[in-house]
Image 1 (cartoon, rainbow, N blue to C red):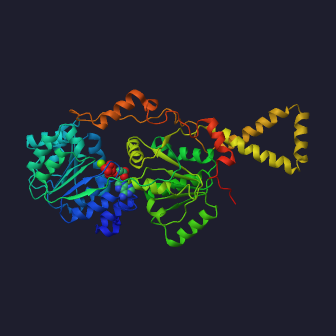
Image 2: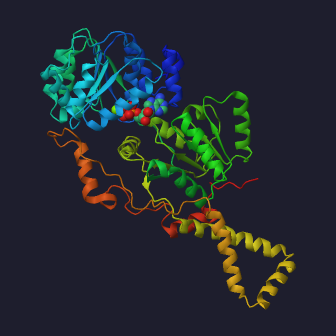
Image 3: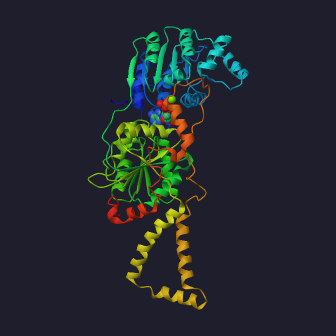
Length: 508
Ligand code: ADP
Ligand code: MG
């Protein structure tokens, strides 16, 4: 599957500008397949899991086709939950930032009906709603769909599971046959296919569910955390494992730039690589990385694809990639040529499900671990200090300093206290840039119940839910319940000795 560039999708300047501003580097697979098809006026039936960028896949062509001079509803987007309605509306807002006079109205239960009625009276161009509330408005006569040219069923399988089948049928029946129908679903059960056969014409079928790829055999670890704690977590891991050559992947240009700034301010030698960086800069950055003067390269997938660095000590998935296969490509940048390597993945909220899917599909195991505490860091640094101490003692020329200490002892200081205080000063200084108030150890994602919940035929969604509720972190039996990496001290000490850490590269 060849992925197109945004520039190849014949988008308006306003849209390209918004996409650049959002930091999107290139279309995801589903976007690359969907956008040109919808621009040609065809229907889409697409199978893709979450996190693959489906919203922009339909939002971009819809926004490009809205006639802002015509005051009637031109597009209807159906999502299973209130949460998704809000998320999708936000994505529309960002994408239409530079387009004038397009109006989008979100419609969901729990929101004051008067406000919705007022918003609907203004003849918006796009409606984004849950099926239940949308039907309410159709029945009240406050929503007219006779001029609609796009209907989107986002996460169709979820909507059917929630008992919205009749509502969806009704919405499709109320819209003109000439409309374009776009249906996305993670699974394709027969009842969905049946509805779509009745309501779609020669749809283009798109399947971006990934096939298994051979994953490199390296240690893979994940951490559950909040988005805002990622920089702290990254710094702690870099320090704990004393990593001198790392590749850190972010999903957008924006993230690359901001992370590089944060890392630099924390004293790391970091540089960023993405599509906005010109060839000259790129070569300079790469040569700095190769000779070790840059320790951490922060990159998007696109930028990293063009570089031939495959022997990094560690790969960080600072963001979980949207396309599953990128995960495998990313981690393949370490552990080459018989060396061992390690891949660290940051997981926020529901991304845990995407990660589990990547594991299942590729038959790999990604172990859960905890972000190291500052005490963990002290211990690991002590190792380093011990080495420096013995080197310094061996080299000698300490008389001048022994003199100072003797003077202090004359003033009634105790040598042990002096040594302890100096050690404390050294370690505290190293900890200055860390935030001790961040506690990573009591965070596990818990899903909130869905809005508009009617009934569910025991699908995986609810099962996952139960598992997290009852078991939490340790109840998840298929995964090591004992966080090991950076936590189990014995294991870590073993890893720290050089023989067991061949992926450690000495800095020149
Ligand atoms: P899905 O609906 O498939 O679960 P979303 O549309 O919600 O996925 O997108 C997931 C995340 O990826 C969002 O934060 C979105 O802004 C981001 N995203 C979408 N397209 C791209 C892209 N081309 N490059 C980088 N990030 C993207
Ligand atoms: Mg979605």
